[in-house]
Length: 377
Image 1 (tube, rainbow, N blue to C red):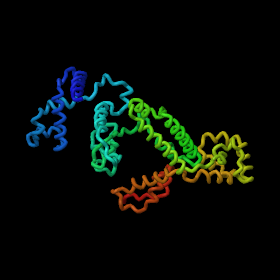
Image 2: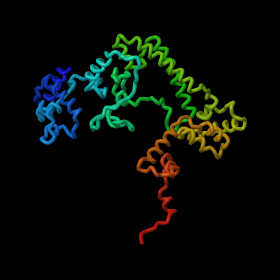
Image 3: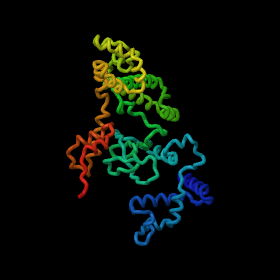
Image 4: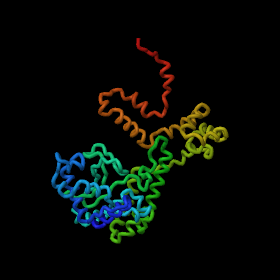
């Protein structure tokens, strides 16, 4: 690996400047050792290790400063010309070979009986990194987040560097269950769709088919010793399905289809006779039908409250209950932002929160017109 690092460094320097730094594996090893010593004895800048007042002999005596800087600017772990566009979708493609090699060594460590998986932060405050994270409350809040599996002794057995979005696409971990315009009808549809997917995934996983998980499928195809992993994934999918069925109770929302489709479902057995007659009248109003497509459900049913008050109230009774905790979490986040350490003595929170979470734009001119100005005398 060190030989490859030296070769890639020489090739990169020639590609960029037309001349090679002509480094060797031995010199690269010295440079890596210097970095380890710099980590033990940290200074504000690398130049300080060579300056007269702050000179640190274990570093300065190994290599001249100009040579160190020249190698540092040309250091390359991979040949850019040989990497495909598909491989470059990996945010760590320049370090991938080294990370995979190091991970293989970690996996060769005999695991202890009890293991723990958690996240850790590698401190980093540099500017040029797309995977740098900020984790409030951590000892080192700025840096790279890494998922690590360790034993009781603290020995690392496996790791995975967190890269954020997968291939530039936001992970849909919330299944669309959050947002300002959700209701129990649409959320129920999404939960039912996901549980059906889980059933299909579990059935295909039991037969050894993991094509629905593209990255996992590629990994299992390349690793012949992954049979035990296949069984664990299948059990996990079944367990996840059981938890979903336990947490999200199956409820038939078809009787409420008239709320979502009042012009195609013009009758409902769950409505009183008076409201069902009103629904028939509404479904025959072509003017309302033309405006239905341009409004959200709550906007539409509020717009007909004068003409169909009972029907509007029945629809809003279904749409109004919180379908998720999104609004609560949004308000709590606003509270945490407003009442920070610089405003810890702020007491009247109701007015501040009302403005923070409201979607209504304040009419500043009208508010100011109702107040009397007090110019200086």
